[in-house]
Amino acid sequence: MSGKGRIAVLAVVLALVSALFAGGAAAADGPTVKVSKSQAGTGGSITVTGSGWRPKTLLMILICGQAVPSRGVPGGTNSCANADGRATTTGADGRFSRQLPVAEPPVPCPCVVHVATVTGAKAEADVIFQVAGHAVEPLPAQTGDGRLSVLTDTRLDGSGGLLTWFGAPPARTLVLTIGNIGTSAVKDPVFQVGTAHGVFAPQWDDQQWRGTVEPGKRAQIRLPVELSAGAHGDYTVSLKYGGKVLAERPWDVGRPWGVTLFWILVCLVVPAALFRLGMAVVDRVRPRPAGGVRHRGLSLPVPAFARRLPGLKPSTAAHAATPASTLPWFTPDADPGAAAGRLSAPHHDDSPTSPTTPTTKGST
Image (cartoon, rainbow, N blue to C red; front, side, top):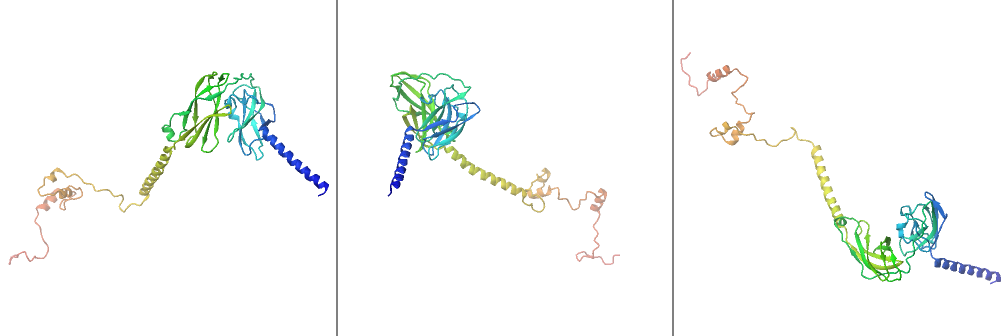
């Protein structure tokens, strides 16, 4: 190999080594965040960029008050403009870029743009940002070297009710006793309560406990825990403070069988109702038999005089009481006198002499 070839190979090797060292330095520095403007007013927007994050990771971007990058966000997400936050996902190289609307946080500045991971291992970064026109107040004094430790086993108080059986969000209360093993008091500590389903990463929620724990003292902490509607299965409730997990508690959430029962009833009742409706429609539109609508047999009451006739059977009495049966010799339209004459006049037979009728010889 010639001298020029060796120089070219050496240059390539040096470039690769430099890139590796640069990548290692960036990874050692951790995730970083930058903003396009250091100050903006409400109604505007800024561009937030970052690098050094885990690839393909979901991030949440918020504007938070009463915070500086060196101390993070002491008040947790309660001091952030959560309604105007934005979510983004890092690329394969661990970078991202996202537009963020400027909104006033619920507490005074100093403010930061806070970026934190939503799933997986927790990572966060802050950058100073000033919301124009928003109030500015000094940060509260640090609590010193206060350290909290769990003294008793944690437990989950509460139970599910009828609404939970029908799919309402399951809720419990995380109860534990903590002690301050530091040298200074801890006032209004902010805990992180996480819920994890199976092997998935916990979903953390910042909750602030109101109170002061003096050095060497203890206090009972009660924090609410709530899952999403219809949740069931094996869950794990975790408590974190100061970046350290203090306690974990399993939670076996029962299946909402009321929802299953409801759908079973729907699958039974709806087809039955449709069947009845269809039969009613068919009964209404089908052709009628000749002679109109058929009626059931109608039995008329038998008059009292007919019941007193001797030798008259009930069926005969009913037939006699039927208005349609009339006597053959009774004609209502005929003259009453003529009718009486017909009844009294002798019967004349114009037919030839019957063999049974005797004749008198010599009669004229």
